[in-house]
Image 1: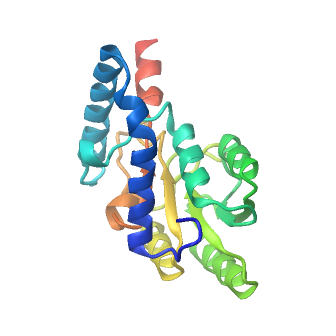
Image 2: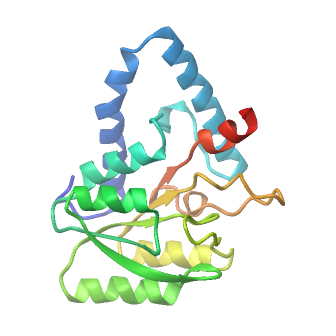
Length: 212
């Protein structure tokens, strides 16, 4: 998978491989773990529907937080020297994972409306011209950590189209999407390009503050 062209079938194959690697260990767990997993799947199905994403238990993988999901995706997709493009700045935990797998991290600037589409296009074009292989674009589109910004609705389809045109998978990390005080739901990248996006969410960011 790591060495194949990043076409849509290859992206789907990558997702299936993730499931096959992790699910056997989950299936051997205790009854209490199964109950917790079922609750988490139900939450994520409801969350996905809320964001316009079609999802069921067959295509949701429960991990110990979205950071483990970032680790799995990176382990499967990245060879040493492959490029991961992300925002500047980006989440420190994910940057550490990328570098642990010897990926080359290239950052694209953001402003008050999130990722700048023109700058992202220029980044991909420059890397292609230099013969450097971009495996995926890692983005935190909602209430960005650490910048705090949200990608504007106008920019979201532009960003998706740029990534599709350059055959770059989008890893959409959205642990904070339901934390806005105004109740607004932003359009997810996943809903705009279901076969071109790996979507990551989180239960803890909602559950833990409310439980506390």
